[in-house]
Length: 366
Image (cartoon, rainbow, N blue to C red; front, side, top):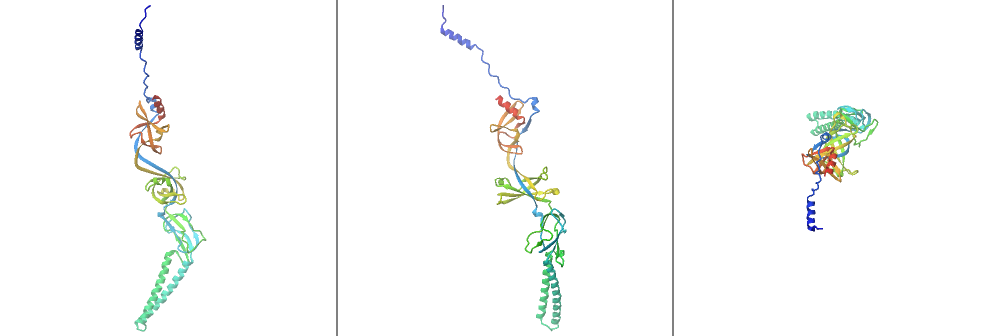
């Protein structure tokens, strides 16, 4: 028997191995594409560069515009005989609000009568002194004294007349009865007068407050942590329980410089036009303060993002078969709009509806 050398066997085996067909490479994965049937089920949005909107929710209360308010005070101490209006009543300028009786005013009329008599007496005395002086019977000194007494009587009378004008003028009579009248047209927003009540001489309080209510103020409370978010001129949108579907638009026109010592909040004032007089003083309100800052950022619909593993992703669309996942970083989200610090550029197109389906398909295809 003949033996084949070992080296020949090895070469033959090597040739046999080299002649084997190469193993098939793993099939290349097809890209994720949007089918025609899926096209109608998705929505695409474009990332845009926009101002960053800041919004702040506050609670507030309607008050009357104190720049368009007149407070009605009593002219003098005395007793309130009759009150002719109530809170909420519409009044016109010159309308009687209340009737009062005052001993002080009655005393003024008595003094006025007395000074009137003094004027008549001192006038006759002055005229007689002048005749006697002209005839050389009396001295010039006597004539000057008579003139001085007459002037004193006139001054005293004028002083009482001025006091009566201040205390109601033509709205008073000799019995001390006087009327309080509305100085402007508007609405009674405050009433502190009741029939039978006595007004003391040291009373410093008003009896009525009248406002036209064409403009009102809304006072809102801002917590210390939000103070930096508020500035004068910011837009404000006010809603009330009475009109839940209606929003009233105004501006922040005053910011308090001190915090309330009771609840540590800062008060801001919003000036609102009150068309139709819908807003009433003491109404509670919800206030939305909106500020469009100078800072800009790329923004997208908030619900276009897919959140997973503590990160946010979007599906970027180039064409039907060119989709990719991009991680985005969110600065803030307001009104279902997310402002991004990175990830997208203005003009990028993203899938914002049913994007989760493509998100999962792209992950499986990777």
